[in-house]
Image (cartoon, rainbow, N blue to C red; front, top):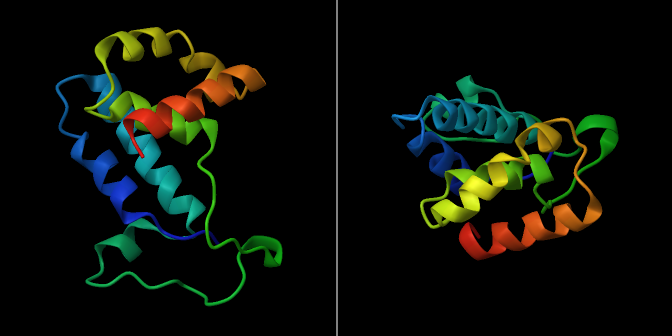
Length: 121
């Protein structure tokens, strides 16, 4: 189980009201992914206080206190960030299918990490 990143979830949820349907859908997918990766469900989030379900290990006994976001998560966070220039968002649109399919190159993955650090983190 990874740590729960409330700030990332809040950023994703703030975008659900976007007039752009593709942005709202991307935000919903990202929010669900963040919860799933933390071993949580929506019911856990809607409680007054969020607590880990099981203290200790996650799947297969593996636990990490900090984790790097996947390229998929970084991609959507960069697209959803209000700090990301529109030109960057337009350029990234061509990457969407390959990111979703996990087919980006190592160079693109590094570039995506850099964009994430510049505009989101």
